[in-house]
Length: 211
Image (cartoon, rainbow, N blue to C red; front, side, top):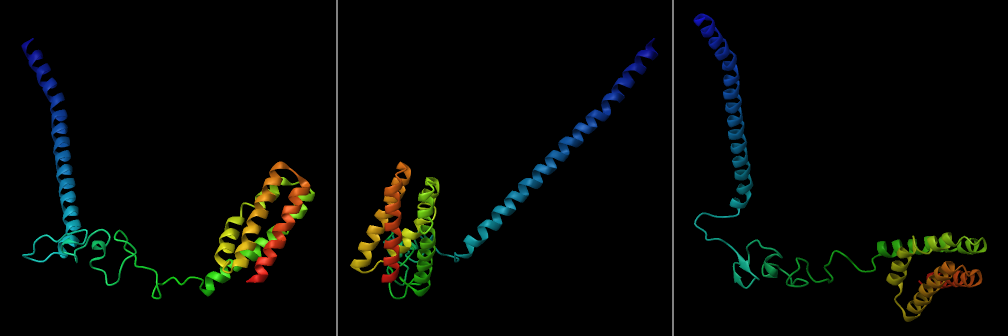
């Protein structure tokens, strides 16, 4: 009886022994993984600090600027030290861009820009020429689509190219005509929509001829 009891106890202890070893192994592996992750994080932080440290010199105090008035105006800061370290005046104390002038990269009304805007007007004339047919067939959705999906570019082009008082007056009348055509298409008034569409075509032709 005693031998059977001892054998049972030994068997039970043997059954639990591998589980304890596995548990210790698992804990050990987790600890090792945690240490590796921690070292990797520290190393990454050190690499990130290196570029910032490269801007400093031994023995220097911290460099900073307060609105470009107090401190070091040549220090790196938001807004380029508020203009105090710029060779030319800025657009505003809160901008990193200079005032527009002869040396600006963008030249207003340059040849490329003018050609692009004239291209918008040429395309718009083709689209407006479709309006009378849509109105005749009472395809009001097509009328409104043509007056909205591309006319944003048309408006910008006309405003950008209108320089003389005459051109600005034609532009204003053209905008009113396309707005009237869209309104009458919504109201499904065929006669008024046709008249407004014809006016818009005529006015855009006049504007194009004045350029």
